[in-house]
Image 1 (cartoon, rainbow, N blue to C red):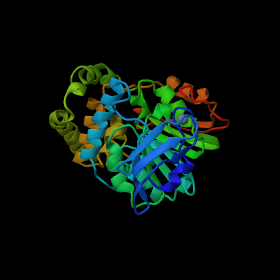
Image 2: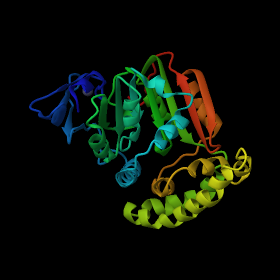
Image 3: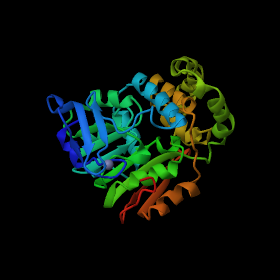
Image 4: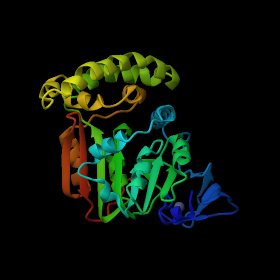
Length: 340
Ligand SMILES: [Zn+2]
């Protein structure tokens, strides 16, 4: 961690301020090993491998740990980089554009291996802080340590180790894997200062009945219980079906005329957009749908209550690829996190 991270962190238990305690081992601008101590409750949090550790898989519930372990394993395997990911992130954060990030202090709730941290850095943030519960933070740290405005911490979205100082917080594809997605969202929003903004992207219940009806039972009872490595190989078979469908059917048809015909097919908008990506992204998506023991698919009404719950202003909720919801809104008053 860089010294500047101290401006942003706070004790997740009591919100007290944190300071370096005792000897630290440095490597250039990074504190690789050391300890943070809370001035309020004297709790101590280790810094190891360059990353401050506020929670780990051993301390959280079994299901949360299993979800994080599955994704952590996944994020170490799927480490592709591509310009398309910028467009993909902007699709999830719409109407946010790259300019919006400039000079802002940004929080990525569920940063995985840090792909979106690097994009935020490229788009000119003052600082971006990524948090994740899984060991993917080690990959994120290694991938981002060259950027002086990127910070990575390990911790729980529902007990965030931060002060309410962020200009913008976003979470994509993570909240719906928490035991209580609405609580995670409220926790995330509680770290945004009044006048700042929040974005969230979650799977929709609408149009996903085939997943909730057919795939979910398989995920809950079978695939999420496999070792991730076994699932990694097994999931190649459904990936092959998906890959051939998007490459041979949806991709070519989406280029015919205005693509209206492709959009009318089953899952047309989504699979047409997926056709631009390669095998590894297809595999990552299939794996993602099979690995987690917890996955919520939210209706528009449920998603809307998140935003009314934090009294957000100027909220824009939209359908993304007709299978997921994206929301963006302004935080108008301090938000109390029910967890802390
Ligand atoms: Zn404390």
